[in-house]
Image (spheres, rainbow, N blue to C red):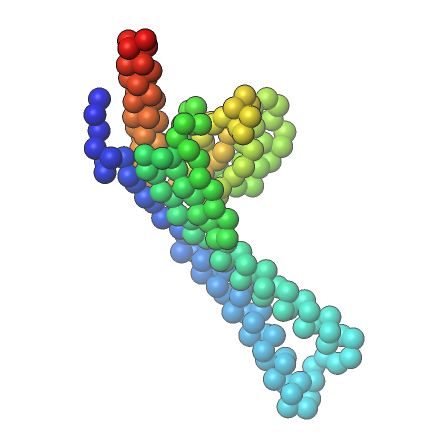
Length: 193
């Protein structure tokens, strides 16, 4: 089964819904607006808060703005790239690469919210998802079973996807292509011996 390497390449941009982005943008705008408005009022000379209260106020609103900005930069967009080497994941400041040779199984996961998925994982015994690569508001995705660093223990990752069937199909074809090439190479070595 010879397959063109170009056919194995697949990329997907997983984005949070417009409502999620709009809500967080509104929240950021509101907190930054109040923060700025109260600060300007303070500079004009008629402060709404003063002394220790102002430190608490500015700290809380400044922290809230920074946390909202951090969430917007790190949990709203994720980039997935499938190639003959495996799958590369990039979400905000985090990234990972799963090599095709460690992938054991790929399947479309049940569509659930991140919170319900995390809650069910916490109470589940047996095989659990060891890491969730998720985007806010996207409940669909795939689960990948792969061999851990010791090549003994099988770990499972959940990866959010807007098109989990396509992503699963591409990863399965990459895995089949890799394992098919490995088996044919193993057969040619054993025939020569």
